[in-house]
Image (cartoon, rainbow, N blue to C red; front, side, top):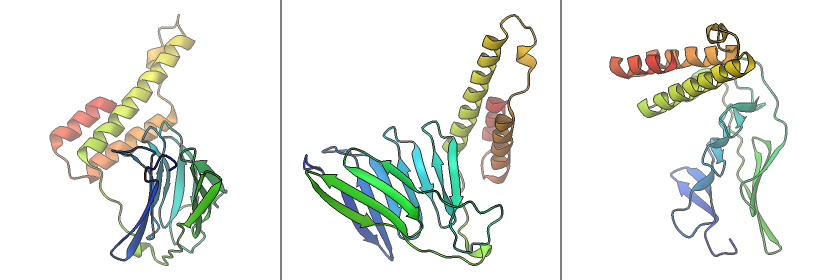
Length: 212
């Protein structure tokens, strides 16, 4: 950066190349984006929440609350279930000097602009998988991650009840209304994760109590 702080790091870890974008700080700089040559990449909002996540299958664009804005799949003949959604070009600014442009799986560029000069890094890669059995299995969620998901659903449900109270202040039935469908879906997904994850029965009971 013009300040002299390190902005972009490119390293090689075994057979994988990694490009890391850091915030403009002299010490304890947070990671704003990380791109790996194995097809996995993540961009973060300044708050630290995930902005864009990409894998060898496709990607997701999230808002700052963690809700999905859009998703897409790469046109690389992956035999994954569900419809294949094409990518619409994405351009984001991680900060005033670094931007990310996503045009395709092998057309992802990190651009650095400062003091009238520009540098570009091609961080895209063409990773193809022809069989679902070759796809890496997702990493199991930790206990802390499961608790965070449960508390987030609980907060969203409380906000929904608050809206019901504000919309129907004189009604005695507002608290008997069912939560919206997306909250019911998220609740069921968390319960499924509890069943499939290797966690204690005590923690599973605590998560059920939180979301119910």
